[in-house]
Image (cartoon, rainbow, N blue to C red; front, side, top):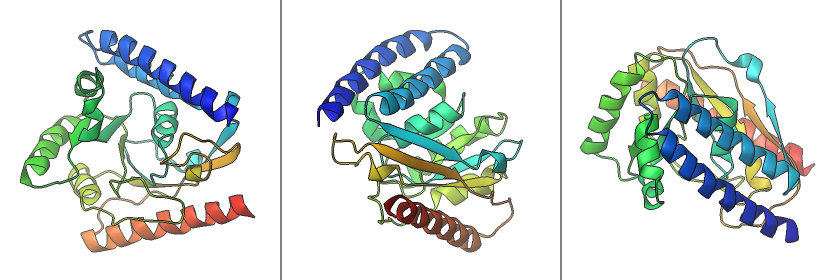
Length: 237
């Protein structure tokens, strides 16, 4: 419990400091300084997770990543998931939920970094906003992160995979890399308490462009859920 409390305190200190620094970096005409700031923030949170909370994140499957612009479709079990991805990919583009806008400075930072901020309610307005953002991403080589379920899921739980991930895949014509994880075993989505141990984030085989919506959605959900469940069993063995 002491380690969890200490991690909670350091987590927020780093976050507040990073928000101030990144808000200042966002004033720079180029996006590059802000991208570096966010990358360092993610790296710092991953290090703190290990040194204070005792949670070691093992990243597997980077050799599977294609050397071209890609979409990363990841399982989302923990608030720590995003830090791992920002640590792994400097300059990462991402889909963010509008719930993040309630935090001071975050809306400005997300706007300047080019994040696509959407509501969970979806609808025509959200689709129009996404289409506009995707026009810019077509001209960029930045990897794009999305959580297809749109919600955090407890280990062993899943939510309906939303069609937005196919819209990205179909519009951008990029390979989509599924990501499995068992990070939720050590960082529960509803508690600040951390459980020390090794957790895994694994990049799986890319899904190449060209599949129909039905085939793509079925394949994406099948491979992510199957490998995530396997990682959970592995950790509990």
